[in-house]
Image (cartoon, rainbow, N blue to C red; front, side, top):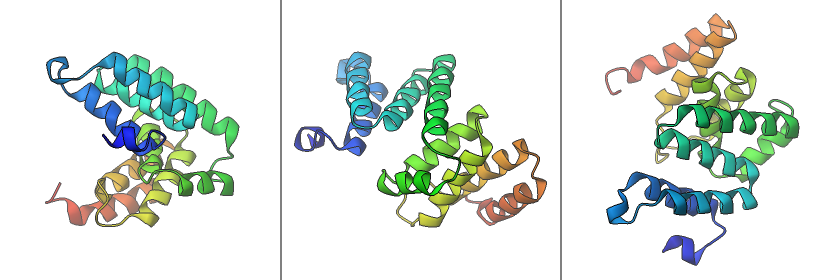
Length: 170
């Protein structure tokens, strides 16, 4: 219903893709319909569209295809923005809240540009509020992982220690 009321709202479109991929077809799920929503997202914002498409392939357990899509995503990001530039941060600021986390998580999980990943996750951390759907320990985990990949042991240890107080919760 939300998509019908606001057909250009990327957050609603992404949620619709998630629902269509997550529920069985007997209850209304549809990969084809999810792909059509992904195409709509790409028309509105190519970066968001590539994130949505990559998430689609992750949820359907096609990790190789997700990696290809995420490779295109990072090519797009790095050809559009300098790593952690003011224009990149301005783009994140005007985008949906979790996009910064998504970019950082993808960089961490698929071993893409650690600088861009750390920048995006740090941006998310700075703006994090309690009601956000992603807990801070996950942000700390991914920053530590990215720091390790670039051999910045000091930064890695800093974020591991930030995550420690949450150890019993997660």
